[in-house]
Length: 362
Image: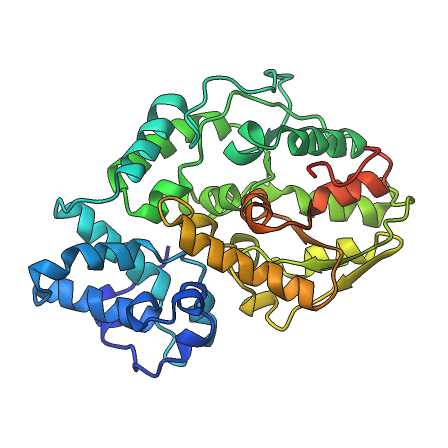
């Protein structure tokens, strides 16, 4: 993360209100204290000690209900690094010993004791150590919630003739960093680092893992699987032959999009699938909506409003389904949708005749 003077950044906000146009939480609640401008004013008051004691609970609520989607930063004329300010605000809360949500304590415990955000003991993937130069890292959501996506990832790498290892994973701890839990992040990321070290290449399925490894760990050898798939399609190793007769609405995930700046890759891949028709929303690429995933716990009702906005736009445009390259977005959009939600890689695998049915999860 770049070095900035956060206290100086607090006063750079022009209070113009442009951020309200893209904030997913503000769109759902329409309340000033739930958007970037309001949160910055609250952090400033908290830092200066002028926040009244009876407002502390509401302050914590507002600061932790931000999805850290970075949409506001795309429209801010002053270039205020809102995400970093919100993270700083969360760290201040924890450093000062203020009460935070018990769900966060449970999540940290699950990661530190069980190695995954769900607190599960076992998964369906056997260890596969061949002393390969490449490690496939599935991430918590795929490994413990959507196992079929993990099998698709493995099938795609086999089709690409990539020799890879598959290990017992530890959570990348990216979510702990988002919560501002500094000590817990250092412990969990330290354990995860031992697993991913020593490889020439680490291929991930989860955009959060990509962000954690690349931006937080400083790894230069991390690659998202869609990058490998795109290369395989261009070289003719992955042959997209089977038609997918559907019109799909592409949802840009925040970590794949605004964080990693991979906007073209999913579009190029989808445009290569015969029969598939891609439609774009009014808010796309840098201004795409968030799925609400980072605040699902404990703000489920707000998450629902945020995710429902994505579904509603896709329905208005006449899409047969929504496609995303992020397992977390898949989970959150699917939770509020009665329609079809696809992972991008399952469409590729189906067209390449690696699987025989879509959607994998109905």
